[in-house]
Amino acid sequence: MIIVRLLRTVLGLPVIFVTMVLFASLIWLSGETDFSEKVLRLWCRLVLALAGARVTARQLAPLDPKRSYVFVSNHTSNMDVPAILAVTPTPLRFIAKRELLRVPFFGSAAQRMGHVFVDRKDSHGAAKAIRARIERGLDRGVALFFFAEGTRSTTEELLPFKKGAAVAALDTGLDCVPIGVAGARDVLRPKGWSLFRPGSIAVVFGAPIPVDGFGYDNRDALVQAQREGVERAVAEARALLPARA
Image 1 (cartoon, one colour):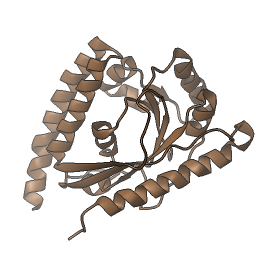
Image 2 (image 1 turned 90 degrees about the horizontal axis):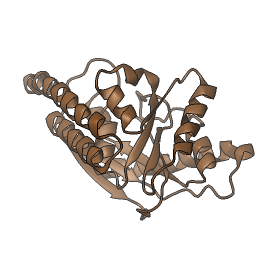
Image 3 (image 1 turned 90 degrees about the vertical axis):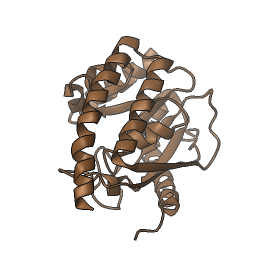
C-alpha cells in the first residue's frame, strides 16, 4: 500500500504542477470571467482525481444563486480548497495569506481573478485590502471566502476564529454561509511532507446566518454564530464519511 501511495504522489505532483502552470496562464489571460471559473474548477477536480479523493457535497438549506454571501469554513488540509471549489454552488473569491502570492504563476493568476491576499500580521492592512475588494464590487452570486481559523488545524478541534469574516459580512451586509469539511486531512496531512492517501472528503454547506441584528459593537457574537454554524456543518460532514477500516 505504501508503494502505491508513493507512486501516486511522485507521479501526481509533477502533473499537478504542470497543469497548474497551464491553467494559471489561461486564468491570467482571461481574468475574472466565467471561463476562468470553469478552468479553476476543472483543475481542482484534476487535483482531487490525482490524489484519489472522492468528494461528497450536501447543502443544508437552499442558497439564492442571485445573491452574494460571505462563506466561512474550517481548514484541515491543502485538499480543502480543491474539494470546496469543485462542488461550491457559487463562485468564490478567497481571502488568503499574502505568502501565496509568491507561488509562481498561481499567485498572479489568482490575483487577476479577484482573489485577495493579506498580511496576517497586519490586521489594519488586511481589513483595508478586504474593504478595497468589496468597494470594487461583487457580482451577484459571487461570494467572499474565509478560512476563519487562519491556518490549518492539526487536530479535530476548531482553532479560534478570526474576526475578518464577521467584519466583511458587516461591511457588505451579506449573510454568512458556514462550510464544514471532513476527510481531507486523511487524504493529505495538514502540515509537513505527506503522501496522498485515497479516500473520501465531505463538504457541507450550512444554512445562511443573517447579519441582521449584528453590528460592529457585537461582532464577537457574529463570530460565535459563524463558529457554531461551522461546527454543525463539520458534524454533518463527518456523518457523510464512510466508516474507517
